[in-house]
Structures are given as C-alpha cells and as structure tokens.
Image (cartoon, rainbow, N blue to C red; front, side):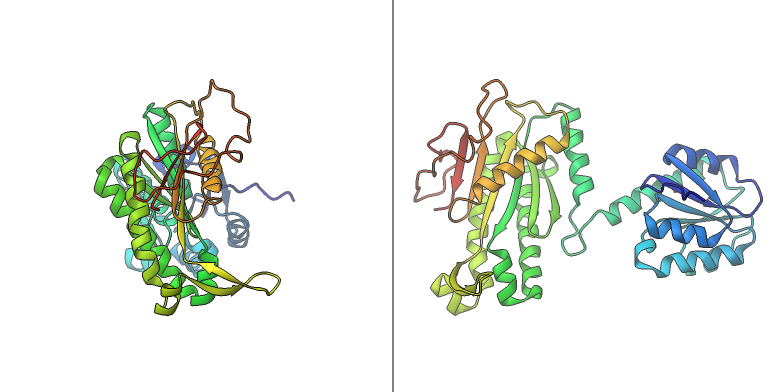
Length: 349
C-alpha cells in the first residue's frame, strides 16, 4: 500500500466513526493543503515521525484511545511539537491537557469561537517553534515572512547579515557554554541597538549558530551598523581570559594540527538594500546579503559592507570579489568608503 505524502501543511484527523462537526471539517480544509483521515494509531504515529504535519486532530469519542495516542505523540521529541487538538462531546479537559493536548474543544462549541481558538493555536505553534531557544529571536521562517512583507508593501529597507569571525576557535578553546554566552550577547546587542534606534521599524532574526539578520530603514542603516560594530568591539574582548585579551590572540591548532595565532572575535556584516535593486522574493535578498557578508569576512577586524550595485549597471558577478580593501580609518564614520564604487564599507578601526 502506498504511503500518503506528509508535508508541513498536512492535517491528520484521527476518526472514531462519528462524523466531525462541520466547523472542524471546514477548518481542516482551510488550513491544510491535505487532510488525511485514519482510525489506526500506528499509521498516525508513523506518518508523524516521517514528516511533521501541521496539526493532528484526535476525536475523543471515546476518549481513552485518543488520549493514549496523545500521550504517545507528546513523549517523542520529534512529534511533541506538532499541535494536537482533542475534540469530543464530553471531554474531561483536565485529563486531556494532562495527556499533552494543546487544545481541547467540545463538539457543540460555538463555531466562531472554535475556529478562532484553532487559528490561535497554529499562530502560537508557529511562534514557539520558530524561535531559537537560546536567544528567543525569530528564526528563518519569520525572517522570510518579514522580508516578504516589506517587499510586498514596497518598503525601502536595508537587510544586514551579521556573522562572527573566529567564533569556532573561541568555542573550541573556551567550551560550548561560553560560546552560547557569546551568541546570547550578540543577540541582545543587535536587539537593543536595532530596537533602540529604529523602534518598531526594526527587526532582528536569528538564522542559526552565530548568523543573524536584522532589517532597518535605509536612513537608519549607517548609524545602526556603526553602533553594532562599536559596541561589539567593546564587549568581545571581555569574553576572553586576561592573558588572551592582553595578547590580542591565542594559539590554536588548524585542521593539520599546526599551531597558529587566532585573533579575537570580530563581527562581519553584509548589507543589501532595495533602494536601487528590484527583488521579488525574500530568497533574492538573502542570497545577496550572504554574498556581502562573505565579502566582509575577507576584511580584517569588525566591518560592515554595503552593496551599491544597481540593477541597471550590469556589473560582472565577481565585482564583490574584485573590490579593493577599504581605506583605513582611525575613527568610526558612516561615510567610510571602499575604493570600488559598488561597495560601501564601515569599520571600527
């Protein structure tokens, strides 16, 4: 027998023989691109383990097998994050929630209230599963949605991809606990600077690991990037031992087990705007921001680089790689420029 295809938009309904309320059937069809019905608990568990569905609806008529399946799903870390809705005529709410249900609904509930509670359940699930546990910042799904929203409203913005330099070496020397502390520090720094200077117009997301993306209005971008670099360079040395901090480096081993000097951590930020470029999808912004971040990482120390190419200029694809090293600057200035026109660079040195 061919197994059904499970996607993140699949709704699985575990039936008990009785017809579902009309409002529940309508909701399943509205929010899921596929609705699968089954009365076999083993099949449901197998489907949920193969790919995480959008939600699982358990018909608790009778309640015992439904709650047993709910407990089973919630005991596994992979399926535990899938929202489980228990529906019945006379459900014991306490028992259902103790079994791990995320929502419990009576079949005779007002359809409008029931639908509102189910939609809220999905919003809450999306929010909780798309934040990073250590930083509590929005993840890739929310980052993509935020970029899409701004593109859809024709808002002019700057997307800034921030990435730590020499973080892996720091993590290897000081341990994952201190490495996690650095990630939290950077997350708080970005949040406080972006929100402090841009308020609700600013957005900060955590891509993963030591990669972050923040979105700000173009007018605020130079000041935000300068402040991020300045504060980071003040705080980063404090994460090291006094001996390493005074030396400005520590001795680490490369993949060939050779000793070499590892500089203190720095921050590279690649910036792209839609001021002179046309983007139709969030992935296009992400790809160009990644390109600019990669270029920034080729420069020494903490630095931010801005892509100044235009859609109508037709520069070659290797324009970024061929850009000259930025002019050294003794002070922080938003007008610090690279020698090649396509790029603009700010640095704390």
